[in-house]
Image (cartoon, rainbow, N blue to C red; front, side, top):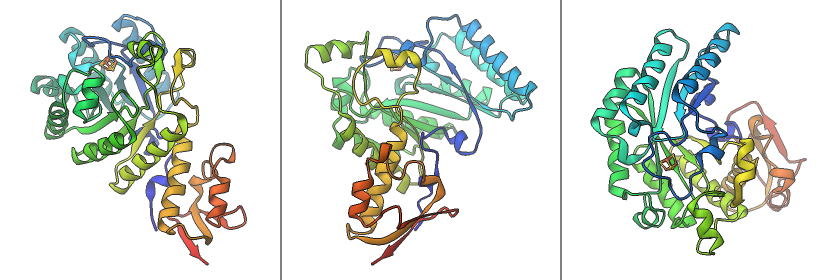
Length: 346
Ligand code: SF4
């Protein structure tokens, strides 16, 4: 049996990372955002305060120069942390000219940006295409009208689906970001969101479980006890199921959970935050998948790609007992250099 994504990196990085290409993020916290979404705390999430765009691009330029001087291969550049295509034209142009120049100089191999589904009109996509952008990531968060309303996103599922179609029709790779556990998103809704994103043609997904972050409107709702985030165990199971759905469709989940910025730890008030979230989800997904294939009958053993070794038993061995119930123990699991897994029946 083959399940290639089990051989991926446990943290679930970008598609570029899967091809061993570094990604240099250029954070533009709240740039282009018309309002603050109820769950969003970009400064904590990116570890970056209000910095002028020229300084941000100068810093990115220095990073690219250092990499080139060190003889490292050209990375992918990624504009994250705001609503790229809703930034004032002057700021979009500055970023696009910077990226196009870096592409022309072969200091980067590609670039991408993230934006909102209600901010990708034909003109914005045309600007991105002319500059050589390869990937557009949409912060869809959910395709459920109820959840989008409850989370005050300001657009509905039709807008989200149309934005996905527009991005694909314009020739970009499409990334879809989902926010499992945001107001209105149950585990059932989340799994339907994954299916919707796959139907919409996503080339890659990101799962950012909703956290209650200091300074957000959601923090007020949480204090008023009108919002309760997912607990970590339910979150891991839901993400594992979502990850399996994506894997079956051949679509990578390129990130699970927010990056562990030092500023983030101090801002998390509640919610399923864990530094090894990606590895825990992948371990759970592997267990679910093997149990399903084995029809929950005990096995004589299992062969697995060596790449699974780091997360197979789960965080601090949390999955050992469940593996043992399937007949899989340190004596009956074999890690191989192949990218397939085999189950041995009793
Ligand atoms: S979620 Fe996106 S659109 Fe909303 S405030 Fe944050 S960066 Fe801006």
